[in-house]
Image 1 (cartoon, protein in one colour):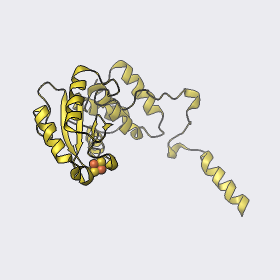
Image 2 (cartoon, protein in one colour; image 1 turned 90 degrees about the vertical axis):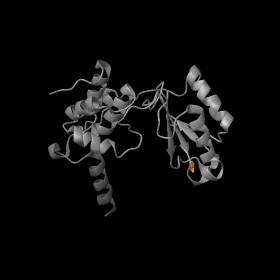
Image 3 (spheres, rainbow, N blue to C red; image 1 turned 45 degrees about the vertical axis):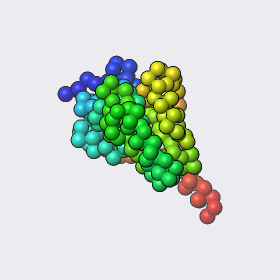
Image 4 (cartoon, protein in one colour; image 1 turned 135 degrees about the vertical axis):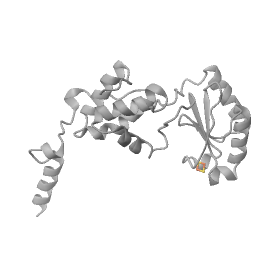
Length: 210
Ligand code: FES
């Protein structure tokens, strides 16, 4: 039975995404992103409909998605604030910054503010070690952050002055669309009747050298 989670527009997009892959199951990750973009996190109804769309089970959807830290399977704030406390950031005040963030937001790391705006996370290295201490808001970086910078950032987010930071779940400002005539025309391996172009080209190259 189909479980309705996706909006009409996103369901249309979901079918387009599935059609890009020779095996439906390969669309699982992009559909998890689409669900999270629509809802802010991945709920049970989303997993059921993704399973329907990809010919898998909700358990497989969850089992795949939970491998990735960026997918949330519980409600999170509109803004997920990741403060790095790994070694480079720790040496330059990352733990103190996290303590300040907890005080400013009134929640411990892992918590969400009562107004649902912010989820605070204590995270491992986010690959900006030369700019420590640093943090991300919905995976957008803030570098060499002071306590005052943090408070300004939170005030700006509350006031809607941060257009470059979309709601949690939105990966890109511009969505990719592949025109039908630009599709690769790939088929599942078991239905292939001829060798893929790239493979036959490699074989020709190898033959030419021999
Ligand atoms: S240790 Fe914080 S970004 Fe690498």
